[in-house]
Image (cartoon, rainbow, N blue to C red):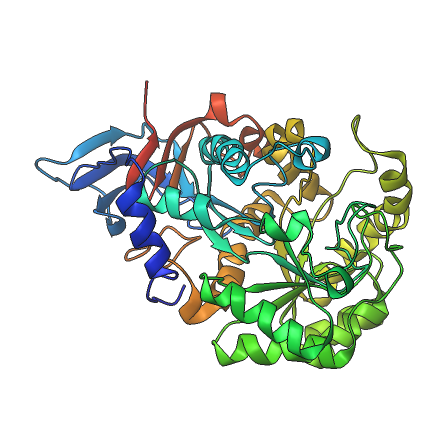
Length: 442
């Protein structure tokens, strides 16, 4: 990833001054002795070697190292690999059920505390970096960066940007439009979404997120399954409105990603200059070819048809998405589209524990080595699309000299037994983020 200045400096400084800080300490050097390395790229493990971490970076990879004063972790031939990256999360929305999010007594502080608890569990599952593509994320990200909470690195989008009646319009039936009532909706006041219509309002919404440190922007360009008022097949935002978001993002040297399923919504977004599509499970092969030729990323998921707590309407709207999912994964890989993976869990906190198991669903289309490359190196390349708006300095998704020390020590060889990654409590002996041990040997 391209080195950059940290984002949102004034917010981080303010919160660092007022938040109680959790002690974060790491030895000046940590030596992983006798490990076999999956570097995030190659199809095989390395021969046994040693990996020296100095501060928050990988300093040297070579056998027979001696590092007086370093913390030594005996690898005993186990696998050292990059930390996982999930490029489609909503940390607040995945931490609370819908009814709790809509409850009148829910405060931003309560929502952040719930998300902080979930963020720590995510880190302990081996996810050292995530892209949060919509929601009230600023306080949580600043708190993790300042050491108040433990959690992954976060690439934040801030509030989703939605048209009236769009996928981000979560107004209750009793809440009239801000345009006519002068009152913003509760979801907007909570920082979950901006309901913005017309070029001027879209520009303001994008710039507001950028002001708070967004690393990329999330625009709702099509219907969704988790929203009540927009059918899944509809196209949202005119070309000029999407182009306004792209123009404002490009002025800040970053990009727009859009929520879209259908050919029409995806093609409009591509013509407007969008760099990434979230979902796309209803696209045709012709549109996938267009994405490949334009170098547009596809951030795809393996979604479930239904879950125990899913509302019947949401499950029904999800049906064409689920039906198209296998076809799009297969075609996108075969055609050479730039692919990334994420979970996109929403409103069902019990699903979070299945985050690792969700990666195993990729075995339908990927070998174990390809799967691990996708969720480490390839996902890191999508994060790098934020350029100078990337909130962290250094390279992720690989184990190589000079890269950031986000690492997992696995009990075994995941290239031979990929199911190891589905049980992090049992199979991840060590988890390191930014050179600091989040999970240590017992």
